[in-house]
Length: 376
Image 1 (tube, rainbow, N blue to C red):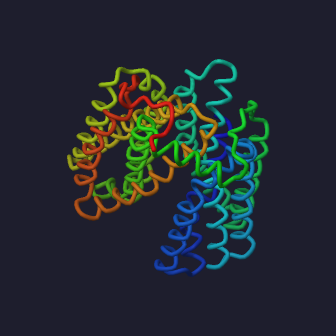
Image 2: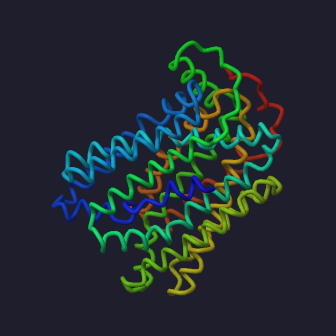
Image 3: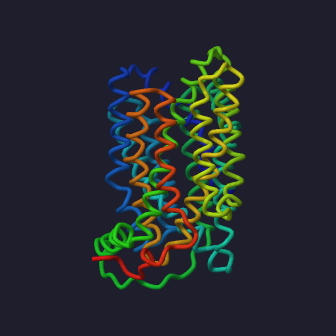
């Protein structure tokens, strides 16, 4: 949890969009930068998981922190469009590296001490820590900017990323059975094959991808708060309240993972109804949004725990990265739904995912789906 919190305690996070504006970039240029970041993640997500399986999951997590630090060095030393693009490429690769490797590393470390059943609880608390640390991050960013502007914010961000990488060096990494492949490409190919051709695993990967993609609605929380009449000065506090509710839900995700099969679809369906209720007057709408996010993150953590429990393969990080790529692609559905009908359309999308949750997150796998090897 300490690494999860430290890796998010980056003062640049609340301010980098303002850095771009203050550097003189147009909204079009900023959108291009975000596209560079997103495309880099798409391209490198699954190869990064394969690298973790082939080389070292701990090493990949450490490398991710170093690459992110390098990106922030470029931003801070030469703030301009080209430098920002290079920084986003480095950050995008770093994000892809940590995406599948961190969950695989934590699961295998717990399994090595015969505590794999604790993964949901540990993963939930890590997710909660990432949300809770937004509070000190916001205060730190404000104080650092007041003291030394963007340069001080940038160099402190570099230091935090390197400290997180240094802390990751202390992660235990159990020895793993070689996968028999002779190349990185072979590991990648075999991991993807298992993810998409093993029937039971395929459904779980799909469920995690679709549930995880729904988190893209977080980008619209400030918009929702403002639309409900919250004044501009109060929007950050409203969003913080939602984040705290999400942290509570994530912390309970381990317990949610142990609920009966029928419970998770009910929780996600209830979350969808709560999201639809954000059109209610200010206080009721904000409460509904908080309940939505708490229930949603509890289901997401439970889904990710069940995915890790279902993987029985040396390609754990690659398979997790396949789900990660699905999350990135699925988030486009959320953006499209919002463009069509706002929160109501996204709520409909949440409800549409419920049947996939019912099929993909069952604890007991039906006999016709239980395949030891991928289907041909």
